Image 1 (cartoon, helix red, strand yellow):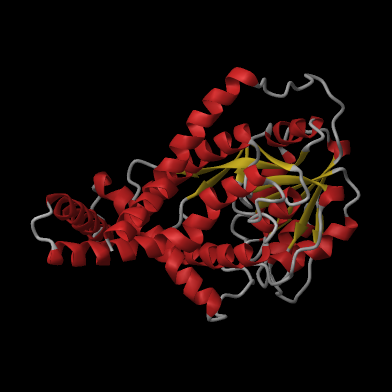
Image 2: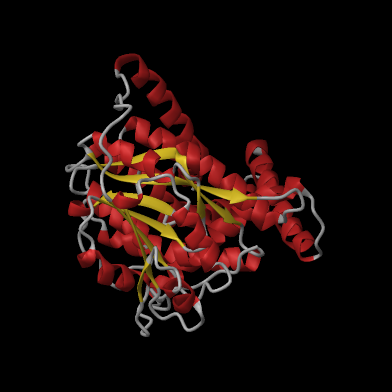
Length: 389
């Protein structure tokens, strides 16, 4: 029991902190021996299709159109396509009034992946850029993304997601912002080592000729599209200077709903991306994929529960072993802080020191709830909009 306890505790530490530390050490060593890829300052720009899947976004869609039209990329090489399958509000009407962009609309709501699969055959451009309707890009975003395709080994490029957090933000907003800052650092180091292991739908791009159809019931399409390209032996680059700005979820309830859906999609992707988990194909990619994704989605949240139970049993059977009592005390204090963060958020009281433990606990609860929902067949691939600030 004690051996299992320490193995589980090590895996938990490795998942959330140890992998980042190890990754940083490895890339510091790599920098001594390997020089980074050098970009041409004035390369010929590829043609780009910018695809935005939108569902009932009438309150923000005109701002999104204006944002797309303001991108710093030659008009003759940029095609902007909105897909509004299932939208029942004025979203399609607003888009149709802007002649600079294209509209594809279908009354049926079959999910985001089905909508994307419908538009892909119409794309003849060299590069496809995907972005969400409720995010806003920096003007240089596309130029920063496409420069990576100078490297013929790159098949996809992930942009950076940034969360807008104000000083009065609650636990979900501040926790989400902190989480994405840490995620951005990991993605930067992942690519410096070898490749990213997925992409966020807020902003990512692919070589059009590398796209392969994804199952229409796919829950997290962005991750699957990028990883299927990685499974072909191409790299997923990361470009922090191409970023999508997004407000945080409206509250912890909305953030939890979003996280559960992502976790359910994570389990689905693990079951389908068998080549990524097989070290005999691309061993470094497998190391990164298991360390950065599989452990978070499928393993570590359950180990946290197991460690707590084992810790209680060990302390009961061996009351004189001080180290286990201290570890148990630390766990109890952490979960108390998380619970207080939850209670105080409901009362609109802002104590930022409680934000991180609350968000961390919520994220791991969502991973377990998402796995249960997926295996019970309760997770739909259709859009599930979370309310934003």
